[in-house]
Image (spheres, each protein chain N blue to C red):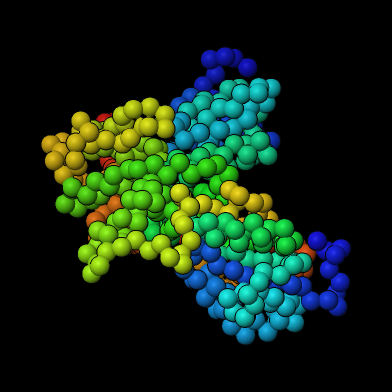
Length: 184
Length: 240
């Protein structure tokens, strides 16, 4: 990856969240003023933090937060993978399916019934309009595509995220095992 | 060297070491500062070789042996770390994660869990196997403690401490392989157990969040293991 990056050209960074809580993105923002250091090295070309609707071509690094919970998540992942050089599973949900996977032992039907019909809502109904269908199980990203870097943590700390990004920008593979772990 | 010699000399990772007749390869490694990964082993309890993390290589043999239940032999060359061993140890951890529902982020022992810290130590940052997502019940029938089989790694420490130290043998394992389950008495609710003394030893030797005190929230269940060496020491003293 080092050969392709010219020193004077900024890397293209994208971030996205799928079936996650946005906590990893919050932790990303917790790098505070260090985001200015990042901004010298990267352009954020797609992210919940910027107003771009279509995932662009030729992205260098993409951080994906969240598990694959719906068909839409899977569709997005399949679009992102060929358009990004380094795909990062960002946080436990992306790596293990984590909290979203807690529905897995029960199946989608039982889960939807329990949440929408059995919890005593006023007019109980399962939403079908404008929402993507759930996948049978919430799954880690690497069940479908090649993942280049894993950043465990729920969420990974700001220091971990900054270190990982700095290493990736410099063309190195970050060694994170001492900095973070599942559930960190 | 006479075959009846009670002291065995051998090497661990190239370092010359010696063992008495009663010592295992794992014992000698620990005495010499070599930290072989283990999960089911616990000082003070019988070693059973259940988790297979402590497997080591023996020079001249292709077979891996579990160091916690293997005695050294004269001249043996033991290797405790190699790419092959790391590969198998990582596989063991990944299989443990895939077989149950270990969700560290919402676990009472998050930050105090041996499965979690061992994964960190051995560089397991994702699980290559499909998660099986089995359905396990949580038994909260005991007034003080609860068991969540989703987090059990079947190390058997709870079974052994209850049998060997407390002397109650409330716990045991039923079924085989992936279907193995830690049970209370004849597979009844813990709260209805006639043999359980509610001592809590099983809770505190459990390496994960499978056994926990009630009322603990995420990351609040730190295990207290100090009692075990003390009880073992007293027992040894009494038997002399």
